[in-house]
Length: 439
DNA sequence: TCTCTGTTTAGTGTTTCCTC
DNA sequence: GAGGAAACACTAAACAGAGA
Image (cartoon, rainbow, N blue to C red; front, side):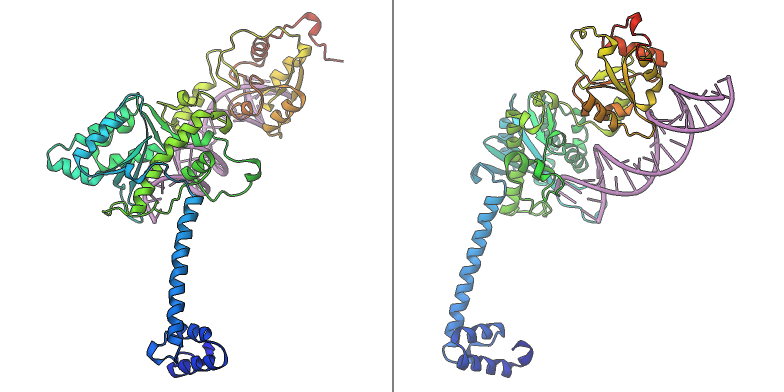
């Protein structure tokens, strides 16, 4: 029909007439609606039918919108506190109440910040909103308004003072996700905030935790996750992801929309819930039991720092490492004979391997073309201890049980290395052991 | 889209081990 | 001890992923 009548009004009207004669009212009304024909030109009864049709559509649309809201509630993380407990702070009087609640020793707060996405804009973004979540409520600090007000009153250091007090107090646990990025933006917003990151104490960056959490169930491995970042962590720990629809909205515009307020509050509040759940049962997320102690107060390890660490690790005080853990062995293992000791040597340590063989140790050596990982495979299959050095140690020690991987000091001669290995594993060599493996 | 951070990769120089 | 092979350390660049 559409192609036949085209845009011709007379043909459109005539088609509706024919449909009324040969089909029914409803079909005629639907086509009249499609052509947007004026009511007065419609045949008797079609206009009423059209009105009914439009009413029905409005109801359907409303139901669809309700269902959308419902599915949002069902599919995404929901703030467990009432809307009345979300406070949007624009004045100093209101902010003071926030201070009193937040700056309490032992307090745990979730902190997040929002700024306007800087598409194509050169320069650092300016933070527009700071969200501070407590167990029973969330404070949204309207940063531009508060700074403006403080400046007008000649007390522009008020807010930086509060933020710095919050971050530097080790007795208050600050939870964030990628906190360094937030603090960088904060420093770019107001120079008074620039040292906040350096003074930070009692900070738990869930981005660091995120990397340690055993995220995927076996069936999920190999499939791309639709969620990422904090949303993925929230999904994994709390069961539902965050609704990130408002993430890239304009956070500078005032007033904020209701959706933005709810999003901002959820983003900060979920940190509290994630943290609480991880602390309650760290083992089920593949975390060590001292989650809190290991993370509070330690900023995330930076690339450079890590490199420095590697540098320091190789020449340890004794010139070697054995681990799987950094803990010191309280007492040496019981003495064993070389026959009871079997090892797999990395291909760099062929000299060491030969020495140990001469002393009666069961030694397997990797070939030059073998990958380091093969050592872990052999160690697991044959119950051998891995002898390696340098960077491969970092990889291999995590693939075998604690204490089953030993890092040899490369700067020592092969003979010295052999002595260190024997001493470490308390292998007692007798005269009968020497060359005992030679036929 | 931009920025930041961390990881991977490639290139270069150094070190170690082995053989002769 | 010399020379070659292999691996490591270090650096810079590229890339990926996360944030807003």
